Length: 160
Image (spheres, rainbow, N blue to C red):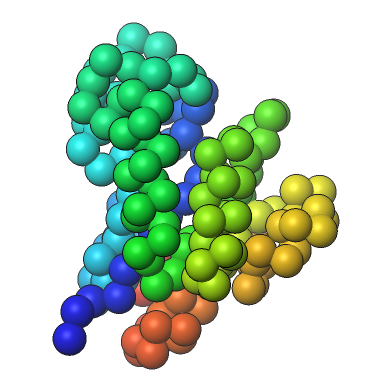
């Protein structure tokens, strides 16, 4: 039997590598029974960038618009579950790409667990409320819900 696939979506532009990847790696560690797909996969070159990532193309592997869009679409539509981390999002909010990923998942009936601050107006948009199966305030809760949905034991294993 193949392992469940979980895609981890969330903001990337204007964040450091650690801000982009740290929580994704924590989710990977908390879901060892799953294949956790990240849009950062194969993009270690981002670590060496002199400035924060923006929404432009880069002359690096998986750095052009077609590669980014098609691979992310393929990853999302072949996943069993999506975890979207919008917790503590910065000014400007969740990027267009994350919204696209949520729409692709919704269109393919793939459940989405959205992590967002309780007072964040992002979660109050009718599309976001419709896209998300569950809206929770922490990644720990999201991981527990993911484990439940995927029929894995829930043991509070998330540690960031």
